[in-house]
Image (cartoon, rainbow, N blue to C red; front, side, top):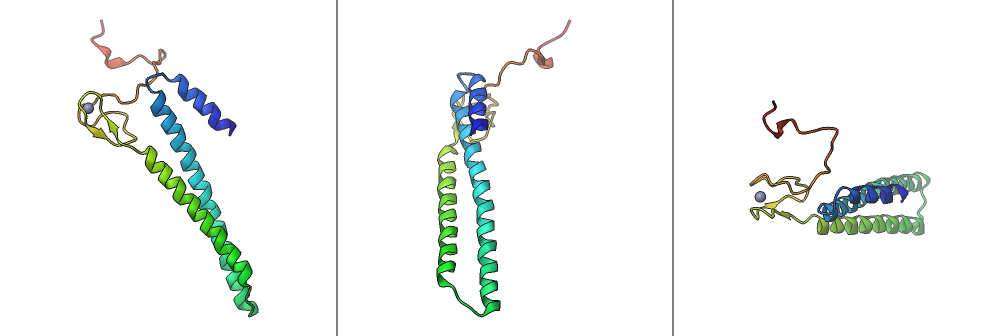
Amino acid sequence: MGFWDELVDKTKQVGEVAGNKADELVQKGKIKYQLEKLTYTLKGQQRKLGSLVYGMHRAGTQNEKLLEQCYREIDETLAAMRRARSELNEINVKVNCPKCGFLNEPDASYCISCGYQLISEPDDPAQPQSAGGPSA
Ligand SMILES: [Zn+2]
């Protein structure tokens, strides 16, 4: 969890205005990471079930208890994935542009309607914007 805590700290330093948005992004990252892990777990469980069924078939035996346990594990993983996805959907609310009121996609950094910057980025003194104005 140390990595995420560091990330939270770093993104919080980005700026007070972007704070909520940054928290959302971190939260989304966490859930996506969780979903990846669950997908991996599910694949492993499905493989296990597959080889179990095949092994039983080859040996001409049946072990309902073992199969039930596998089904339960898979059900639990699927339920956890559903929970994670609905959490993600709750975070994925569209962003209302404060300037023109247009509803932008959750990940949008700029309003597609008027170009207003929806996430303020940190000023980087090392890279001044070249399009800032006429140069002498
Ligand atoms: Zn706008």
